[in-house]
Image (cartoon, rainbow, N blue to C red; front, side, top):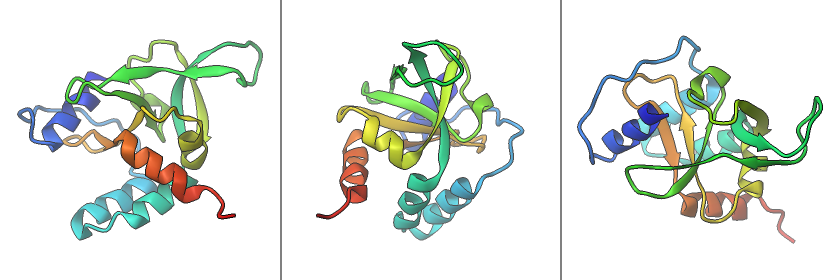
Length: 151
């Protein structure tokens, strides 16, 4: 967890780089699109891929049984910008040090619809240098509005 927050600070230039160990999980389609967008500067393919990708997210269950239907997201305060974020990843093993020990799998579109407006998203990546991709709460709000049906 600390590695992910540290990598956000490194990418923003707020703290000096440190070694961050990558997991053995292979790069995913979402990550490939993300890394390509960093080269091109075009983020629209990232958002299109994000809403259709399945992510694990750490939760605190309010129910029991095989399926989790009643839950709260575990929220982490980012030490870099002091704002609340939800940590997600396509690979469960990237969610180190989970407080509750429970995680659910949910699409990016479902996630942005369920999040409170003040929450951002940190996506755990396989990159040993960057470690995470942050989506600030304003961008989450933009995504929420973008995927709502026009009517």
